[in-house]
Length: 315
Ligand code: RIB
Ligand code: CA
Image (tube, rainbow, N blue to C red; front, side):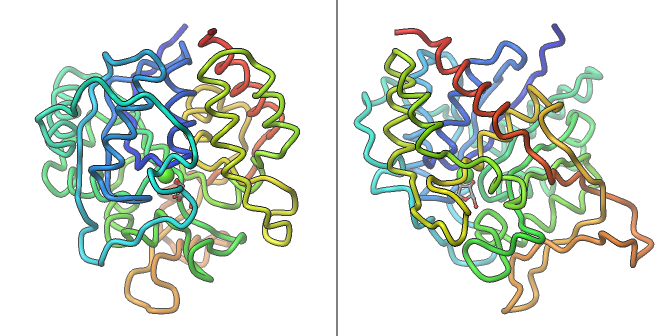
């Protein structure tokens, strides 16, 4: 098996937590480290939650690096649906360790530059605001040589926004960072709301997870029950869209997804469209394609994968 080495940049966050649990149970990837960012909740809390989730997974060996405390230019915004701790109503064992001393951006720069010098490449999985990644690129553009691809959750095209009429949360939370990342010349796969709205954690799918014995699966069933947005008009079904776990799922099983390559820019000048992702679907510019946008998800295949991997934790 060709094991892909990955770093996960995140803001746990309920769906971020499920994403970490999926990646940590998947032999197709080796998680080198987790970096955290201000997003769903302040960075101190996202860092603590990342440590808590690694502990739940029995993976206190995974280093966690705390990152940017605020976006590059705009004021921080927080997510609306993550619960007080950021992990819904889950009652979890406190972490037994602290984050590493090194800052997340310094860790990313060091690890990726060194990998590039050795001729190796690492995949970056990102499902929070892109502040750490933008700072990393501005700090040391040479990181590009050590990056296989950035696979990120963010953006909205035909789906429209979830935090404003035009913008998805991760893009809106730091649009200047997102603009830096998508224009950096690094291969990018983007999972926008158009894709994630196809991965609904319906009551039936959550019940299949609840039927799996073990603390990890039970915790995920609990937090996904909290995640139920009850917004039939927006999502077309009960449950909530499970955005972030699609990122490691794409790395592990790209055959479950369909993509379209295009030129994408992130808007940061306009008030109405602040944080909007804008694609050139019909070739109206001469710009080179910079993003593979995921537009199709085999949702049954994804939930089967997630359920199987949660079962692998055992009791
Ligand atoms: O818009 C979805 C994104 O924002 C996800 O990363 C989720 O964690 C939410 O906060
Ligand atoms: Ca997230």
